[in-house]
Image (cartoon, rainbow, N blue to C red; front, side, top):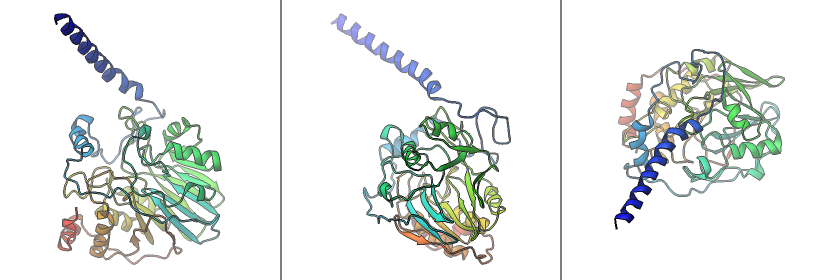
Length: 387
């Protein structure tokens, strides 16, 4: 009996030793230097940061309780469907001239066809958003089957989170089409590990795609990590695609509000025909209207106003369950926020349904509405009851 107890004790001791060694070694092993360069107002020589303040930065320890409640489903969140039926578009091979066709693939993946270019934003065709096939599982299939995708010319990758940077999808697209892939600093190293070539720029940097078409990498308010330990080793961004005529394309990527000056900067590059703005994954507690790194409809309508965009499509919702709110809360709340602010032209579209976007026309003058006033209006219209 004593011998058995000694064996059990030894085994337990070795387990404790292994766990402690793993805790000490693995995070450093998983850390990586994706970028080396000069110190700037958003890079300290080791890691990137938000120059308008890192209100979204939380430690694993502080967020552990939230994550645990989410994983085990005991956070009181409303139910999501396991599966949502979607249409499957078959886009044309090309769209020339000023005409623009747009198909929401799901989450932040959007196919934009215009000026003879096929543009994809943050393409994700995998079933899960996480490492090794583990992570949130999509409830809506991609709105275009991969086999039905036209030849892709340009891909925008906003940052390295798994629901935005899907290396398996990027590799398939690279092997098939050899598209130009534009991203922000450090992400080219992550993408390059999959054997895929990407061009990385700092905020304000540009990539010439073809005569009359340039991609400008613009600031956002977010963070990045593939493995926790490598947090903020690569940069996050939004993008402006300057087009020859008809107005520009803006893609916000994944962002919190921050100081919102990044939206003002995007507007300075010229009239925006279409803006792709996130509206989901903003609630991590009952009643929350935004998180540090994600905007919801309340802040999205202010982004839209600051951009001066003629039209906008709400993305980053309804595909992967990443937060607390019900699946249909983001579009419902967006409709109420539009009514409160008197705006128009900012809506959602069904996954897999191709829509035509008119050329840029100056939108009606939009007076700013304080966030407190907008929240009060939403409550009056029943928005506060949306879970």
